[in-house]
Image (tube, rainbow, N blue to C red; front, side, top):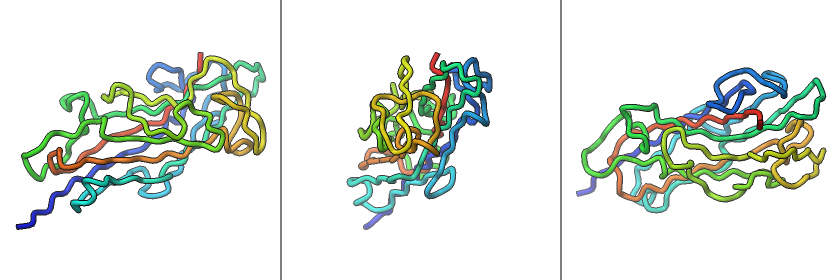
Length: 220
């Protein structure tokens, strides 16, 4: 007897549209860089809008896994109209499962299609970030969120020094984090994001959700 087993994973994607201080990335204040909208993140979703969906309904899907290639393109604009030369930025991805009562290390389960199997850990989601100039220290390598728990981070840019933009069509090397824009230096100020899940048969069939926020803040 054949029985279909379905697991749906929904990854909700959002950006912090302000240029925030580092703690929580939730305020619009800025000490040295221009605030939004002069400094900002632009997120282009190639499919699914703000929701990315993984559907596992074939046996081969569970063993081989699924990868969504290039579905998110993040573009950075960092502005300092005062021209003080002290505007540097940090870029992070932050995961959220909705908080309690959801266990800290698990996806939010919104529907269940059975009772056997384990709950889905946040660590199951893998993310790969790349750009043409390899400015992130994790460029091109699959990552899981730090500590793999609610509020965990993947740090894309975090250099305490100023690494200036090289200019149109060039790469300056290192974690470029100065004033600049993807419009004039796409290779340094844009990031392509891939997502991968490989569940095997370990988890309870159902529907699960996570939220991922892209956050830009001053590197103080």
